[in-house]
Each structure stands twice: as structure tokens, then as C-alpha cells.
Length: 230
Image 1 (cartoon, helix red, strand yellow):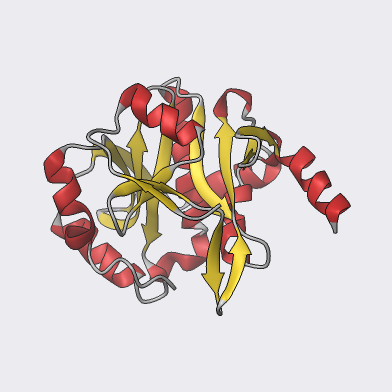
Image 2 (cartoon, helix red, strand yellow):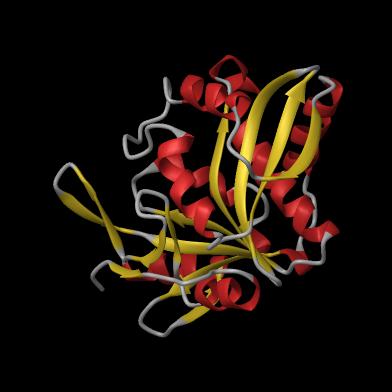
């Protein structure tokens, strides 16, 4: 399947839920919903596999509890707000770009301002602080039964604390607290390990979108199919 784009008038509530359930996600570089079956890596097309977590089945495992305990011990505080671009978030993002591999986002202002002005999405942000210092932020779009993380980033000085994984856990926690069933974290791709952290929260509740059948299947079932096809 080739990449597809869709220009929305509004993606909120049930509308966002519907398009996420069909394997569509927000393209930050365009501000619209899109779907694709591959990405380019060194002039080679690599297949991508879109994921979601069924939060209603989620359980904290030992690895997840260790991560949460480690960060609780550090005294990090988590707050939730409606997303608004401010100097604090922008400054943190400029630091994060020093270690990020993407180039399509220059600043939060350039990426989000025009879309925010139109009110196309309901977007929230989870902020993690070390004392008064902002060290991580997770932006996500909100529907009625689903959320879609669109940008998680953190201070490179705190790279050893697993804040990318922690933000995913906090987004799942937000969903549990607000009785939201699904979290859509994006895709994984064979041979590109930087996406594999999305499997950290709980593989037992992770589902993979099968484009040709237009349905979601259990990750472990999908993985067995992949192994059988090799």
C-alpha cells in the first residue's frame, strides 16, 4: 500500500477513534492524518507495523514496576495539561533534538501552531519534572475511546532514566484513569531497533494492524506468523 493522506476538518472524539482504528495516524510534518505500509531507510523500503495497546487488559509486569519505582525514588513529578506551546516546552525540545535522529521537526511552534489554531485535534501533554525542572514531555491526541501519542521527548541529561518508556507508561496510566480503552503509539519496523521501546509496556495487550485484512491481531499471534514466513 502506498502512503495515503487525509485532510480532516476535525479529528476529535469518535472521529479520531474511528480513523485510529483503521490504521491512520497524525503526520506531524503535515498536521493531517496518514497511513503507510513502509518507510525509507538507506534507499530501501522497510515495512512498518502499526501498534495499539488494549488498556482494558493491561497489567504491570516486573520491568514496568522497576521503571516506575526507580523514577518515584528520584522524586520525579508528573502533571497533565491541555497542550499549549510555551517557552519551557520549546526549550526542552531544542535540547532533545541534539540526540534525536529525525529532521522533519524544527520547533514546536512551526510544527503545531497552525494546526492548534484550527482546533482540529484535542491534544494533551504529560510533563515530568525533577523538582521545578521540566525533564520530559509527552504530547498525545485524545478521542473518546483512544489516545495517540504523537511526540514524546526528554532532556538528554536524563537519558539513563528511561523517560521515553516512562512517558508511554504515564500515557497508559492516563488512559486507565480516564477509562480510555486504546493507546496507539505508532509503528515498529524490522531491523530498526529505535522503535522497539513501544513493545515495552506489555506485549500481552499489544495488537498489530493487518492492512490487507483491515483488522488488529494479538502481537504474539502476529509474531508467530512472521517467524513462520521467514
